[in-house]
Image (cartoon, rainbow, N blue to C red; front, side, top):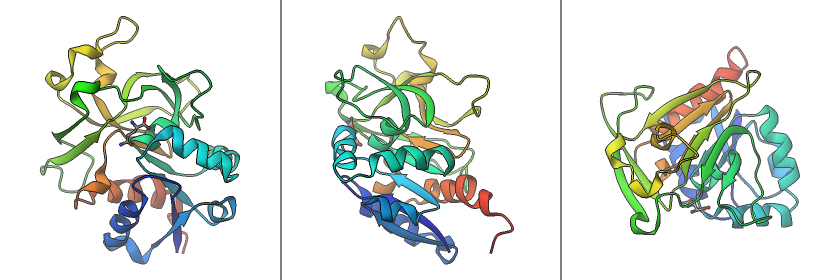
Length: 227
Ligand code: GLN
């Protein structure tokens, strides 16, 4: 089977495992919880869960898995949700100096807790054409979610595909900044090559369509013809 690891240092990792196990694809894929470099070695793909990105990075460093993770993301499919999305990004705006280790796998600049203290958490109905049953909206659960500020791919990078975005009128005005255009702030699920991020938490719903999307689009597509 193809092994999808879930980084299990802190945060909502069990919910991701449960969601993957619910997928009917679970004859093809197996899941393991990843806490060490040895665990990571067994994985064909990885999910980095939501939680607290600084804590996850610190625990990764302490457990010796941070440097292996940086190598892993260079060649393997990885999906980051919320805190995991921050870790996958290239740059974080507003982070304390020296306070944020990143894996930098996606050409994205992101802001932690970008919705501001007045809107800590919210739900939004998303129309996502790339999912199974695209006519059925997906409920995005946003919890102290990051906000994508800009896409920064160079010509040699994989192109970035916007998989889901919020309607513009949901954007808090507090997010207007002279340095960045408004559009990327609406992006809540984006894909670049083998990498995928969602700024919300699909694993906290019973709707497995984003897990299905990651497995099909980012993972299984690599293994076509492999038994
Ligand atoms: N605010 C958290 C961070 O900055 C992310 C929140 C989450 O993962 N739900 O890491």
